[in-house]
Amino acid sequence: EPEVTQTPSHQVTQMGQEVILRCVPISNHLYFYWYRQILGQKVEFLVSFYNNEISEKSEIFDDQFSVERPDGSNFTLKIRSTKLEDSAMYFCASTDGKSGTGFWGNTGELFFGEGSRLTVL
Amino acid sequence: AQSVTQLDSHVSVSEGTPVLLRCNYSSSYSPSLFWYVQHPNKGLQLLLKYTSAATLVKGINGFEAEFKKSETSFHLTKPSAHMSDAAEYFCVVSDLREKLTFGTGTRLTIIP
Image: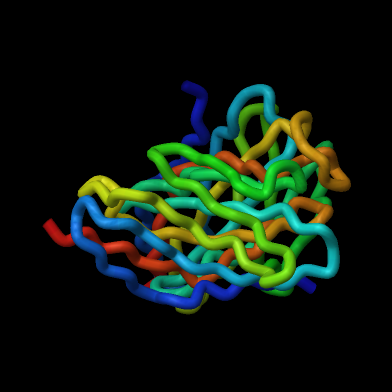
């Protein structure tokens, strides 16, 4: 069964360092997302991406964050200069956008990866 | 704006007894509602979804949920709990742009 894969599963970094989290969405999917979950808190939307550009981003997604789809298969989240409060589980998700009734044709049936745990020291 | 409230942060039930995980939602639109499950060290898996079709929705592993507009509720139920059901459960609402808003989660513990 197709699945979303994320690497690394766990990364430890020093404050101020750059981090890149990688995701390989399901191959025929067109819409891509990053969510994060700080330990003990709810899962929060970061950004959505469609047609090689950001379609929506949250207040959390400030100038320190960026996303790109460099090669048609990977979808990356970069944090330019990590802060302690960036420590969280980061989830990548994708959807094909063909099966739903929403504005973008989605149902919100996102397929999530297993997450990348980022620890900033 | 949309939001979900999961009324219980932790629910414990004995194996073989019914499960009830409560969720209330708020949305400006006719919402799409979902339940996702997260097993330890695993990703988020869709259990079931409501998208304005039948109000009683059946999902995987014997779970179901009923959409009640008058009560703005979307509670998750299962007639008989199994040990493998132990996990974190998230009630989720989706807006027209498919941005998901998660509840705070309910940790389900199954007592042998």
